[in-house]
Image 1 (spheres, rainbow, N blue to C red):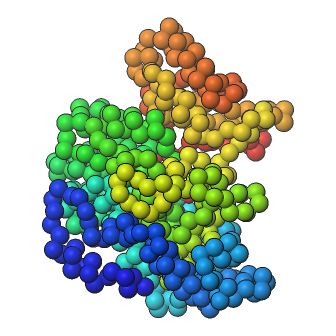
Image 2 (tube, rainbow, N blue to C red; image 1 turned 30 degrees about the vertical axis):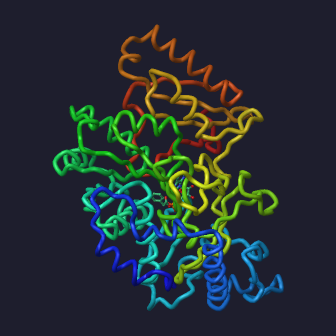
Image 3 (tube, rainbow, N blue to C red; image 1 turned 90 degrees about the horizontal axis):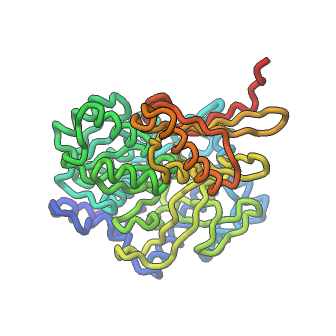
Length: 458
Ligand code: DLL
């Protein structure tokens, strides 16, 4: 499968001992000329389509219904004739219905907790785990990690892909891993200090919680050797990034992935922080119009669709991620030639409509982080009264603002109200609350409480 460089990479990796970083041999495919990359992609695409066709009955029957077989893939552009795969396909084939290899070849299962009912299950062969380690190594190298770095991994270990994904990638890169997993925040802070941790990997919302707790314990993260944050698994705005970078004295990088495709390791920012490089020799990206399914050109915003080019246990053909972004073909100043995607600010299914206006949670975050006196802890509460959707935003304010009660509070309320109205075009019910009154998350933050279908009191 990774015919292309496997042996040489292993040899180079062992020779490689550059403590200052720079180029990591596993990153070689990031710099392929376009024509070589496309040749590689086409060969892998043909192989993966044939593999799925032969081994996944659902995929085969959808192909046959369109009068297609694997010979239909003569060029990369032929991919757009193939059927989509969606999250419900995984739910309906629970647990193992989409596997393309016998269980005797599956060495790992992961699952993502669905909001309702059964989780979705994903599988890996030994080769798949190796590809995963490779793309996570490339992710970490892209973010400037090198041997000698001590990475504290506060992504959750377990069925969630974040913990083990980052773990294997960091070990393969040659960094020292502290497998802290999520939670137990005081101990995390002690380890960061005592071990001289240089890299912290966790969700951005947990990072903000950790920063806050460190301050309460009298630990200034800016005085620690910590230099890089590896953040992902949930949307976060540039305002949130600035908050993390300034209060922790680090550079915070955005990494993207999803269980159905492999876990983390699908795309990563580089030091330019201007879009995420997609490891497209393994994950072929398309952007579609979510309404019509038509493929959109690079640069246009739409839903990200990914085809796995090398996965064996559970290949995904044209998987609809529901994440909204755009592809960037222009070369990156870092020198990588693989395409980038814009940061994911929203999903096609996290939008809600308030008095006729489309609202995304990230818009609220952008507005509130621009106002001084607020903290990056908030939640959005949706209710329904007399058939109309109502939106309230609860935001924590700093202790200074809160203790000053009337004047400072009114001042923040006025500025925040204006900022939200400016961004969303509507007024919302604003509730300024005391620091620490909104629940903290150890993994993915739940920003929206949707109570619209609960019976109204009385
Ligand atoms: O969250 C995998 C992951 C772990 C990615 C650690 C990065 C770091 P799932 O639990 O299956 O997998 O959730 C996938 O999370 O479709 C996006 O909606 C969202 N997501 C992941 N990364 C980002 C990101 C992991 N950097 C879903 N920005 C995806 C915005 C993200 N949303």
